[in-house]
Length: 542
Image (cartoon, rainbow, N blue to C red; front, side, top):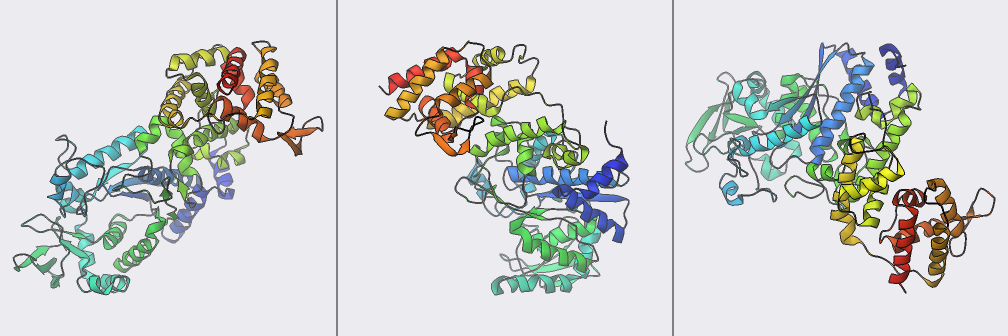
């Protein structure tokens, strides 16, 4: 029986899951400044293809938004705006795009006014990247509104706020100048004119500004002519910290999170927003994602994992779990984190139905699925599938389904479409990451004896033996030197078996460091196949 909205709210108020902690800050904000609608915002710089961090920001903000709806029993309207900074000038050509020469010839122009280097399908580079972002967010079913900086500037939506920045010009400068190096401070202006002659976003000193006329004047760096432009209508844009602040002020943004590298920027933009007469949004600074070398992932470098890559090897839900976990801890975002997140997601889902409502609110799947996780029905783990592919060198789904069907009669691709998808993920993952690094190690003399004993014990077991029966036999054979674990006792009080025994099985038999529970693997793979595998390993090392 599901809890009523008021019961759920009472539990949520006691929960210390991070989305609720964030949502409580928004509730407290509304007590000071009541509103009929709360606006959540995420930002995206479309100078490169959307990377996985962009997705993480939308996923996490969506979790906070849902937590807020629970805490307010959905009595306050909420919106999520995914805002693209496509009016920004292109500062450098990204490493991971085609037609670099063409892009180089357009450096400095707004991203929305540079031809699409990928095809003629979109009117601009910015439009192409915006479309990629929207397609991806739509695939995940996020509830959001898309906003383009170019549209907001040129349509006049920002005009009143831009005139307010002009009016508060000196106050904005007083906030910004102490944060800049002397050289930059000497030429800094919050307004960046867009050159009518070249279309380039100009970083030039503003020689005068006229609040009454709503204009700024500058000297063209090439022709030396004095040029006067209105700050409205898309003739100018703001430097990014004042731009961020202006946006918060103009739209009344209540919540926006940002990466740890933007802590100082958030503070400065917050001060500018306050100087304009606005209230800076709530939010927190999340830690950055690192690639396999411990470097920060970046759109222009294209290092780390892309969204498309993760989805080639694992489900969207596993990616959402990765984003939910420890948002304030730096995490490696590389291929080797995928299997754990796939299986951990499944474990959280399996446990959900057995939890009481309070425990459920602390379960990541509650936040991933907005309080409505699907029923759990995954008869095998991802790690087990990977080991099956590895042991059988199965490069096709039919072979894997043959094993699964024998292990779990009645389970088919039709009855278990999510498992069928996972079979495809496992094959892709094996082909790209496991097969190229497969390295069988030679067993020592004592390990050869243990393997021979295991082979003989398995060959005497009935073909339909359960995973538990097989695991018991494997455990008993491993109860010998050098695999004894005197600290970890068995159920009968005798010394236990160290992980070294099981790791040796995977290293010698499968050419991989670790694997799933060995009894479960043999039950799916088949006792006869496992005996043949041990024979092969013994022959290989003879």
